[in-house]
Length: 216
Image (cartoon, rainbow, N blue to C red; front, side):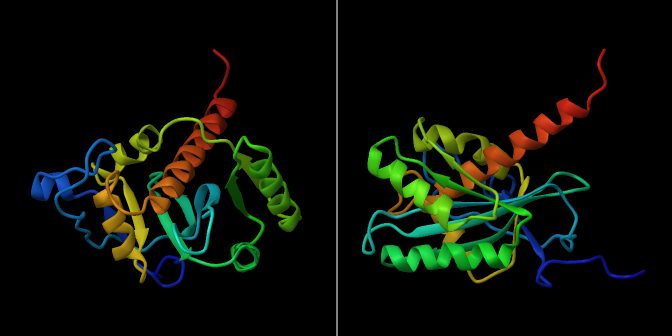
């Protein structure tokens, strides 16, 4: 049998065996006393359901929080959410803009890009400037209104039952550590990006399913 197509010749590593193995949860209410442990699953096929989405959580300075770009896709056969890639950096605004543009070129036009939109005028101007920078790509700016903890609830529930996976990569440990420490950890940029990516992609798949459903 031919080996299935894979992305970056990587293995899928599921998050969420914590509760079963250690009696621990990643929740949006309290941090874990230990980071999630991962186990290797099967190869991740190229075909995904509903496309892929990369969300950018933009830092306000080059010395505090990180700018994070997290890419998520749903595996077609079982809709397992897979964290495909995470980019994390501190840098000047021009360096961040260069990274966002470079990653968009690497992801290709099939990957939708989402960015936060602060309600203040400066935030709207920043969002508009990124949309202009990314002309030719599918870009959406999103205003975040609820608390970080509430936004993280949906994906946390799936992580805790082993229904979120990630590609094996150098960024795995930092991501898992941040999930385990949330909401009391020093950083939550990856959590914010994962929450928005997961919510958008699962909602989009549900919307398409309703559209295709026959009328009763």
